[in-house]
Length: 350
Image (tube, rainbow, N blue to C red):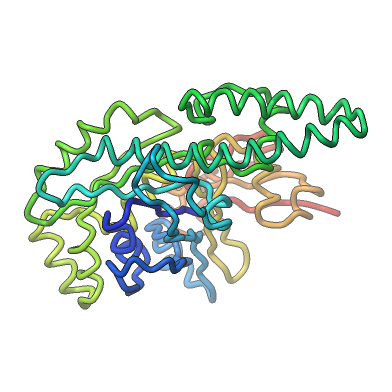
């Protein structure tokens, strides 16, 4: 999973990036540097299985954070911002909102960022409509004519100030649009960046942006950006004590990852093959054969069965022999829908 962190100048986006990634990038310098970090996804289930099985190798799912410059905060008054190409490849965007200033206005900040995203997509649409029109006139390409019609409908929506994620597209249209990597088609996780002594501001800011929250499209989280960045400099034991004293139940990275998984409809399954325990990330609703392809394409191609053990059963019985003796290892076919936390061994033949 890839998450692009964006925000107005001085919103604290690089601070939030540092708090989520453990990096110590310079903040508040208005630099146009692109910061990126790949971190492992904390997973207590993987930790527990590793303790039970003592494998030679433990591999967690990974998530990439990108701290991207380019947004001006001027909303409709901005010229089309210079968006990092990497940002367009993100699975979701994480707009950071200033909720630490004396009089924050997160709703306006969201609207301004959305307007700049619309501007960026309008540039893409206009450019491609022009190219497609010229090509169709020269070649009479019928497939190109259908794509041109689709782009023109996108242009009309963007001109009306709509986000493309709010529009309904057929599967074939959706496949075409994925190639354009439009920003307004990406889910959003709005992060309220508040000061440690203003915890009540979090609820107030959430109320102000409530109208933007749509299941599967936009969610929100509250973070103490500056303080959580500083906590990372402490030893783990001291950090836990301070977090408890401050009423922080989960680190910033855990909050962002949990919200992002839920927003994108992602789950994890675990393999314990041989000397390795490993977590894999898939879409909720993925069938066993497709999940096998996440591990290796040969497994999907030659899929026979999936041996599935529920995580709770694995923890209860502790060993594969005891699990099988209790009848808790189930053989499932290619259409079995993988559940979050399933421990799976794939049987295949090519």
